[in-house]
Image (cartoon, rainbow, N blue to C red):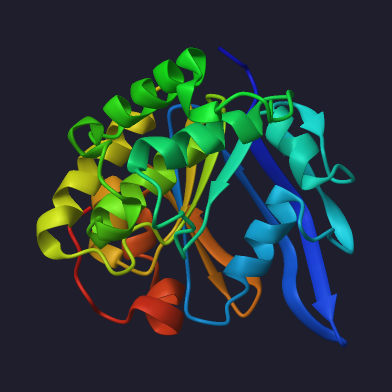
Length: 253
């Protein structure tokens, strides 16, 4: 166990064309914690995630991952240190099976290049690792079907399985509940609770019922500034959060 946060964002600031998109954003994400980042469209959430994962460099501030300053590291270098991200739009090969998609993700994470004289889909080690991940996200029974016929919720599960390759310490999830129906939403809630054991999860999500059912901590971003961070109950009772984002809506926390 570490005695410091898995992730610390310290005074992150990013401007585009003189417009401040994130301004002095600071918060921590701890191990075994689901930390939700919420806010209206245009609040700067995507820009903040990009600064955390390394696809954008902040103009000011630091990103600390497992006690190491990674502010100047590239995305793949941060991935090697335990950061993984799933995206809002799923990116799978529709004509390949679920298992084959995940095997390619496992192989891509490996430091070895493809062995072109060998069929990668016959690689026993890749098969075993991919099957283990599919079991973790409850897709073992769907491994032989083409990814293109998965339901949207199942695609999200496959996307999360791909993000879990390499057993990351920090998992960034970008709107995992987007497009997921009510029936699949409860399954996804249970999966994310399970996955938070032994790692940190930073969740960007617009489904407030999912957020307040899952999150241990919630940070609220409005117009590029963090206006509140705390437990779900603390955030729900925060007058500024109500005035600027949530209104008087009621969610279980």
